[in-house]
Image (cartoon, rainbow, N blue to C red; front, side, top):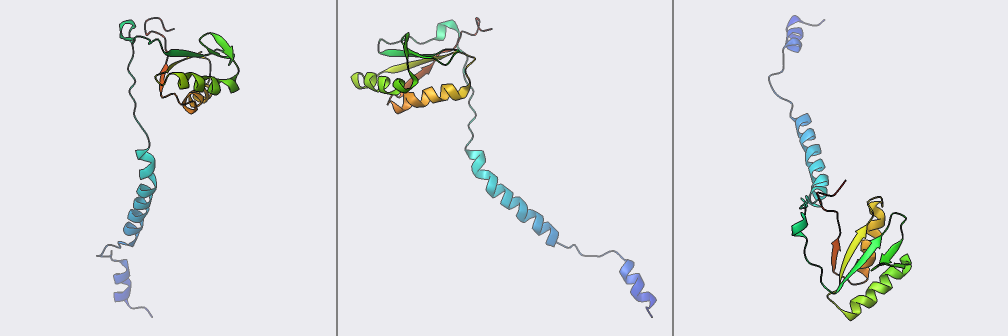
Length: 141
């Protein structure tokens, strides 16, 4: 038979804190922090400036304009060019003048992937100076 003193002891609250669940939760949080920390350091916050008409830098005489129209056609200084010929053509231009600057103009309807592909080809051609043309803030729709 169970004595009454044992029943009362079981009904009383515990006077000590069980820290095992607390330690488990803290270890899980540490693991999450260790996994997420490298991902947080790889992001960049870039606050791009807006240009007014007077702020546009002058174009130098060794600048080349690469255009990407709404249909995905490429042109260098107004002359149409095949996409596979872009890199070799720019490589030849860069070989003549190591200060070559490429002004990239793209139609706003082009997805970023297409523009990024053109930027990659410009970089593979050995051109380090690239400017991306934008519309003036006052004339943008």
